[in-house]
Length: 249
Ligand SMILES: [Zn+2]
Ligand SMILES: [Zn+2]
Image (cartoon, rainbow, N blue to C red; front, side):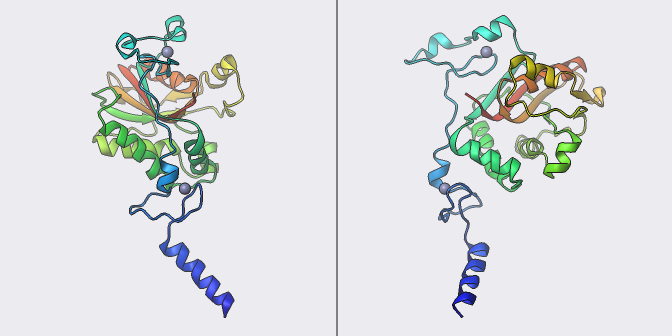
């Protein structure tokens, strides 16, 4: 009898209670979020003082906001990126890092809604992104990776943002033609070699003269989005502005 009651409670828990994907506590707030408020508040937004070219957060100890308007970091001055701007919303650490890992590697597709809500809140606040994108694209997975994971995490983010901004999402045009290993442990030059020539544009006519908003989940050194921007621009795109959920700092 006790065992039956235990199973019954488990079933009821699963059906009616939402548990936080990070700390496993019961979520008391209304809505569909999969994270409790306590964990949600631990997601750190990127600060305001950024390189105006690559979006790198600048290390400053006091308010220099006036002087820093239009500031370009040393790396960008030396070698400007191909993309026109990049905007990242949160720091890739702590709760958010864990969430993105669960989303991608435990393949919990529904977490995409929680993650995209961070991006949409950011856009709503009037921050950042280039004001007139014509279309949305995303950094695609290779077919083999897509098959392993079952969904493309950046496609889901891009689709929702496209819906919110009411601009079309272009799919199956930018594609990854070569399977590449993870970038995580590679040095700058190795990263570059790893992604060089890995993306192709299938239908240049569709993106010619367009302002593209390119979506990715995590910006680490920017090598991948820069390579995508290079390929897109070579195919005739006017602008490529990048928006990523997280940025490694
Ligand atoms: Zn929690
Ligand atoms: Zn920079």
